[in-house]
Length: 481
Image 1 (spheres, rainbow, N blue to C red):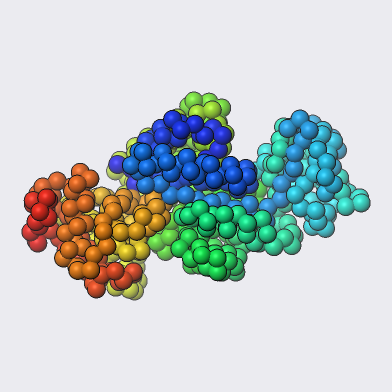
Image 2 (image 1 turned 60 degrees about the horizontal axis):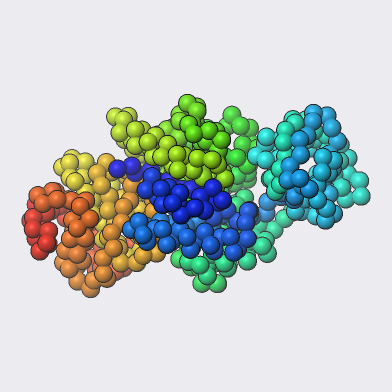
């Protein structure tokens, strides 16, 4: 069973219920709603469809709301797209027009204040490049330096840009309120530059009933890379958004930056998603390229908690095949001998009871070759911490809160079972073991490690370990070893 999770962006390509069900069966763990596209009604219908199918399939799936953030995009063309030629002039305007081969409207009216003659601007994650020739009457006159087809709503990036746009836009606030109302699990915060940005979003969520939503900070600009330590500390997780990041910093630095960020997140026990162009060719083709297969495998070797599909699942021709491809690559990579050597980190200087317990649990599980680690948990902290040490056996969180189960869909290696809330420790352990056995995850005579906190139902109080052998699972009999 694969331990690295799969995030899939929902869109027109998977609006069909049969396709969505196949994606869940193929290994989708978290569904991403991209608020750079679509209306609230579009997202509401997709969310409703997802939850209905997940219920039918009896699977737990998390939901991630990806904000627009302080991004800049072109608006629409009269014919949806234009083909730009090398050397041609092209105009960006704040006027309310439908674009053509000579000009297009943009989403940020004051962009002309942030650019100078000679600045480079990149479109559609860097596929098209233009240079600023002049600024006249609040319009930006450009020269195309790398040609291509430009279509509706594509992104604009300005390396080392001086944009004064607010981090949390009014549109983002409306989207976040929609997410709170509809019970989403994660917010992917776009274009995070510093801890201050994360704190601003945290404050807005907390003040509006979203205090349990995890913030996944997207690293997609140079400032975010520079301030990565403080961003990790203040976030619930990180997304390495390689598309915009590859425009903001030199593309050849992306592999090193990806590895550095993943390692920092592993050490901090914060889930990390590797995203953008994982299987880009599968938007059009039923098979991935060898380079893409290598890219996915390397992200898994790096220790990423999850890999993400964007247009591959939202708008591509082969969404199910793309998920199946990711699952196969993850499974084969994790089955290799070198995988667990790669993802083990040096945790010198562990300085809390919970950290030491988590490390010990992984060590005991490895040395005794146990079938599973079972972690009864209130808020999901214990299984998150154990995941940090990358145990090779099953890691199963037994929780009484469905929203916690949904959040753990993003955490490496963690599977979940539901149990009723308990008030006594022995009853808690018994219910957890029974629930795991009923799912077929452990069998009679299997050895398991159980770790939790005492007193129970206090989040973050992990302080004990038990090694037991499962006997009569129906009556929850165990022998303590």
